[in-house]
Length: 402
Image 1 (cartoon, rainbow, N blue to C red):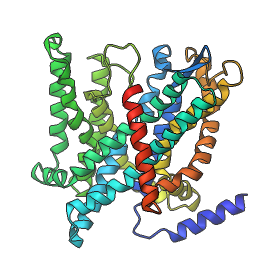
Image 2: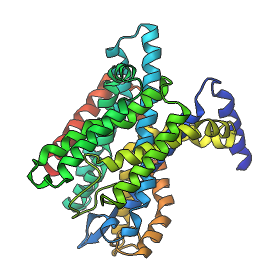
Image 3: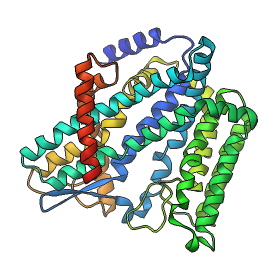
Image 4: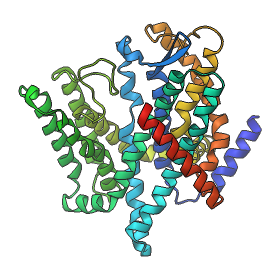
């Protein structure tokens, strides 16, 4: 087994172009893996009268909130995305490729897996109902599947803005992300300040674009050499200091994800605390990039990075389905299964849930072995039509039930 693994690692290493930015792939893999682990650890399911319901452990287990500081790696995710898109756009522009053609190629790579998972769920919903699964349980699974997809929608918006981000970064001389942070801070001041009660509810939506564009813009400026090592150090230390001040002095919620019943949330849309964390994470990623790149010259370390990156969209689109199907199988055993379908209201649950992570990963790997066909170009027009129709049917269900 070990010999086979070493042989695969050596072969993969030899086939990797010398120009490949291994550190960037390593950061992307780390950010991608944080998504399923975060959802699996910070999201729970309870079984009540034979029906599965979503349940967050954060409402009862406040000590898990700091875990979200580590597992919420959207700052690194969008930072790496901004850098990669900026470099890709520069190469495309040098070849004479227009913005529309460039964006079409990147959109297809993101849209195919999303349409694929939606089409499969369009078949899975009536199948589960025919097998006697309660409608509310099916709805729970659909909600779980849809939850991560907003990342992809926002990422598409940011990708479309890449040419403008490049110009914005040039004109602001690398301070564009600072202007975005100031805009989010201004909105937070209005909605959380003494006059917050008089502010309209839609005001928070003004943070949606600048909030998620912040780390992406940092990545664009990083790609164009506008962020020096001193600048990266300022981002890391300044972001950490701002994070601590917002948490301890201004009493921002500790959790980086929503907590049921909480009056305030740091996500959807992002608060200034999200940007502070993204700044700290992004600065640290920039500072560690060269060291990470050297470490990933080792074949055995490089192999899992390649595997994760090759299956990135599969992991993103299917990890919640893997958890749901595992919990659904457990619910058919006749009682609540510890850490799987029991209420997430004790420290013991957290330990039990840790034991389930390898099972979720195995189920995801099994699903991915089939689902990866959605990632590449689809074989025929009929295939595309069927997937599109299935995705449309699921969208109708989602709008009505989710």
